[in-house]
Image 1 (cartoon, rainbow, N blue to C red):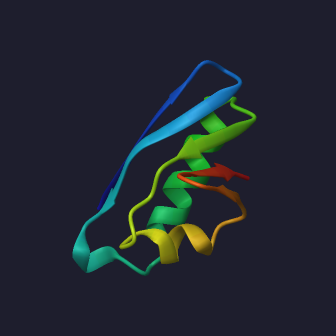
Image 2 (cartoon, rainbow, N blue to C red):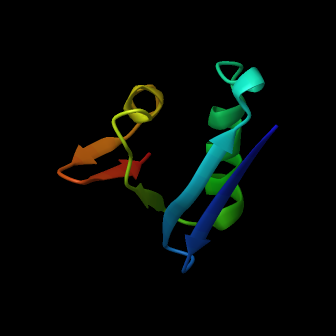
Image 3 (spheres, rainbow, N blue to C red):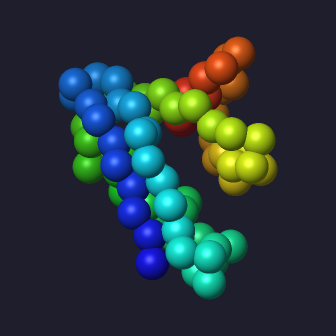
Length: 73
């Protein structure tokens, strides 16, 4: 259904990959994957880059946006 990959040093995480099968999109799976990756990483925040296609999804999450980066939460 979906997968996420996050790298972390224990303080900062970097979401390197997030994907959900087309037939399962808009069902909350991506949000659950991001939340689970964040929780299990032990990181204080997640840094990520997003594309214009994925911006609407990331805009729905609590974050701080910087030019080129988003910080979650």
